[in-house]
Amino acid sequence: MAREAPSIERCSVRAFEVPTDAPEADGTLSWNSTTLVLVELEAGGTTGIGYTYAAAATAAFVREKLAGCVEGRGAFDIAGAFAAMLHAVRNDGRPGVASTAISAVDNAMWDLKARLLGLCVADLLGAARESVALYGSGGFTSYDDGRLQEQLGGWAARGFRFVKMKIGRDLERERTRIAAARRAIGDHCALFVDANGACTRKEALATAEAAAAQGVRWFEEPVSSDDLAGLRLMRDRAPPGMAIAAGEYGYDAWYFRRMLEAGAVDVLQADATRCGGITGFMQAAALAHAFQVPISAHCAPALHLHACTAALDAVHIEWFHDHVRLEHMLFDGAPEAVDGRASVARDRPGFGLSLRTADAERYEI
Image 1 (tube, rainbow, N blue to C red):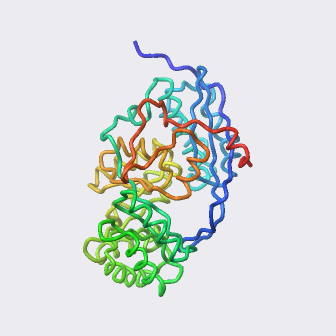
Image 2 (image 1 turned 120 degrees about the vertical axis):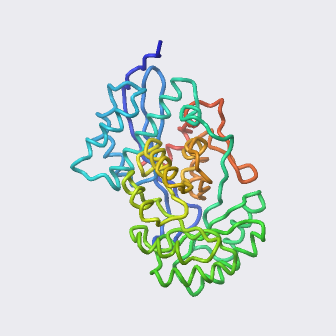
Image 3 (image 1 turned 30 degrees about the vertical axis):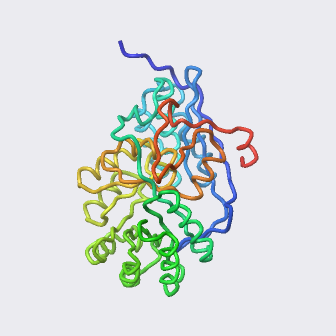
C-alpha cells in the first residue's frame, strides 16, 4: 500500500543578505552582497527547506501568491503544487521574481518529500552517477591579477579540472588577464571565460580568437542570451574546441526549447533557483537530452549536486565562489569539493542541509 502523505501545515519564508568578501563585478554588473530567500514547509513533524538567490522582494511574493498553493496540500504532491503555482502567477508574469519564488517553493517541496521518505533528493530523482565534476567559478573583473591568480590557481591546485573567470569590462585588457589566469592554473586545467552578455557579436568573435591562443575551452554568454542568432553565430564560428554556453536566465521550459531549437549552444545551462526549482531543472535536462546537448548547472551547488547526480547528460556544476561561501556559512551539510568533484551524502535526507539558525540570524533582513 502506498504511504499516505501528510498535509503541509505551514509555508514560511525568510531572506538573508550576506556581504561579499571583496567587491565583485562581471562584464555588466557590480555587487557587494548576495541575498538568499529561504522557504520552509512543515508537514507531519518534518520541515523541508528550499531556497533561491534573488531579491528580498521574492519573500513577499511567496507569502502573498504562493503559500496558499501549498498549505493544505499533500506533501508528496510536487506536480500539483507546481501547476497551482504556475496558475497563481498568471497575471504577474512568469519570468523574474515570480519564477525565483516558484523555484524556492518547489525546491522545498522536493526536500520535504525526500525527508519524509528518508531519502536524499538524488535518490528520490533516481541517481545516475556517484559524483559530479565541478568547475571553480569567480575571477571577477574587480579582482587584480594577484587575487585572480590566487583564486583560480588555488582551485587548480586542489584538483579542479576546470576554472572560470569573468571578462567583458575592458576587452583590451582581457588578453593580459586571461594570460595571467593561464599561468596560475598550468596546462592541465581547462580555462573557461564568461562575458555575461557584455560583447557585441564582432567583439565576441575577436575575444574568442584571442582567448583560444590561451587554450580557453568555454565561452559563456559571449553575447546577450536573448540574441539566439548571435549565439548561433558564435557556435558556428568560434575556434575549434571552444564550447559556447548559455541558459542561466531561463525561467521556463519554453526558453530552453527555443535556445535548443535555434542551435544556439554547445552546452545548455540551467539554474534550479530560477527555472522552477528541481522540477524545472529536470525539464531542462530532459530537453537537453532530447537535443543531444549536455547540461551544466549554474551556481547553487548544494541544490544542483542532487539534480546533476540524476540528470543523464549533466557534465558539471558551477562551484561559484559566492554561493559556496554562503552555503557553508548558513547551512550544515553543504557539499565539499574533493579533487574537483562532489558527492551526495546519502545518509542525510533531502538536500542534506540544516540551517545554522544562530549564524543565519545576523544576516536576516
